[in-house]
Length: 190
Length: 195
Image (cartoon, rainbow over all chains, first blue to last red; front, side, top):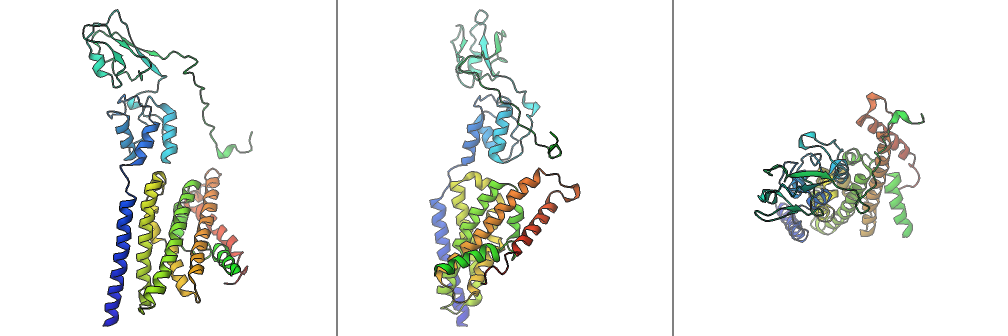
């Protein structure tokens, strides 16, 4: 009888000690939020364009962390999908056409003669890149514009054009060649 | 003194390798060996767990179970120790490397059921004239052996993934064959030293 009692007491004490250790560790190593979301968010282009179906880049990063496909960001294009695939250790997918095509970097341009100063495009702009006031002509701050297209739709006089960003020595980038495809059957052929 | 530890290390890493000679811990061996980086992360986590778990179970056995004559409780108390160490490791990995935490996924808590961990803890108490240091060395050696084999196997599987494998053997089948061949190779160490 006494051996049973000892066994129960010893196991109980052991469990209590380990429970206390784990409880302390849970407080000491508490994780605030989900750090993976920050890493995903850093890879997204931050155009806040909403083409992925989410209100901005951060909500899409949270959705990716919860298992949404990584191929819904047209402004990011192939390079963003590749970077996300590397980060999350999943297969890269082709861009999902439903959410728009990949385009070269664009910038909005307001034909200022036609602008009636309705401020509708200012409200649509997610990054506050349009300058102007009611009944005054508006214009776009090119450095702030992310080329997201969201101001084109609300304009009542269709005076906003999306122009490709002029290539200058500041923003020119080397165009990466497509990654080599390694096929087992090709070994030793070339 | 020093040679004893070297002998224990060699014995657990090569001669009595827990995966390829004693066939313990095959689940993570097949499950997490798809990519080299993941395998390295898993190796580190398992090394940490195995070493800590073998030290703690040795202490539990020697200073709690033996004085109270409760040796029959060793399996349940070792499982308790291992579960706690794994839970602790999971918290640390989640805090320090969220990416590794995500990649390892279910295999991290599954270290609890890795039979190599319980196997090492039980084998340590079975061996006679065990000291604290030799128990720690034994656990560490077993973990090194597991890591070595897991990383080697992951490297092989990365090469196999782009190789021209006949259709019926693709996937898990060629993995099993490779593991068998590696096991045969490790059998070659038998008799190198006697433990």
